[in-house]
Length: 162
Image (cartoon, rainbow, N blue to C red; front, side):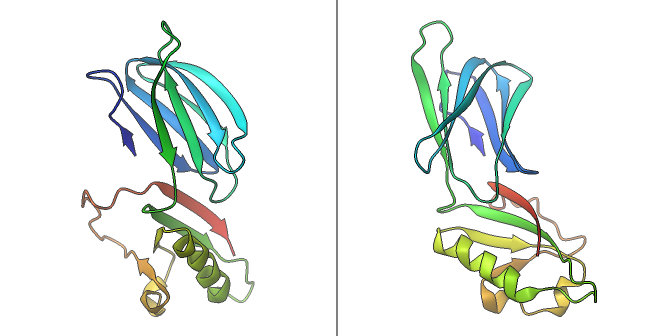
């Protein structure tokens, strides 16, 4: 997700992938503070400038509050809430079943959790087209599918074993 409500001509990107919540500063300089939304726990901070990034580990589908602070005035420029509600979640499941059959019930349960929190699940795994995922609220992605659609900005990208 692009954060545009910073100082004029400044912007940053916030993403959650590979078990980390990452902030990339594309232009500007900020003190960036990370908080877990559940309980408001302060996790840490980085001073970031143009072309740099910072990240903290996350587990599963945690929601975050990220503050962008002007390093000179120490005032909060903006606060970004990285929430599941209204977000698109891209899920890359791997299945530990030794017989090669995916554990779809676990996948469905996980997607249901995303849906309950207001998110929408997109999913890709080998041979996903052989399964009726859409009836369970999961939008399958296919090989060579064009996803340049601006409406398909994924706020959360999750690699998960089932």
